[in-house]
Image 1 (spheres, rainbow, N blue to C red):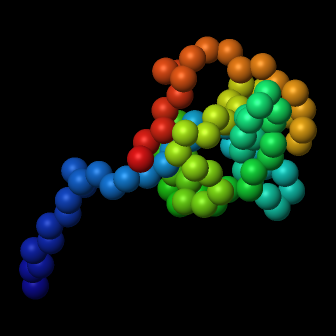
Image 2: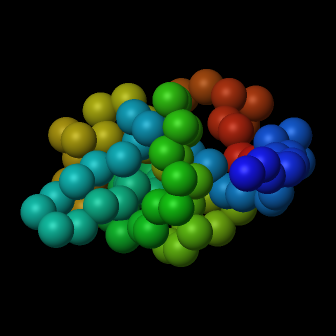
Length: 94
């Protein structure tokens, strides 16, 4: 018996991704700290796929939002933060 199978790994779908180092796990919750007006706010997210350095987010985050990466595990909700670097250092895939 034989079967002919075609797999297309070259197609790309639109996806919102965040760096793996931005993920914070607090008990049963997994999320990221979104930075708005120099304040960090914990936001629960849902992840569909995980690659080496990136996580595909399906819920809880919008394109263009800034997330904490370095030291995210040390933050608490409402902590004041200072964003360094420019928007060019962010990657948002959509």
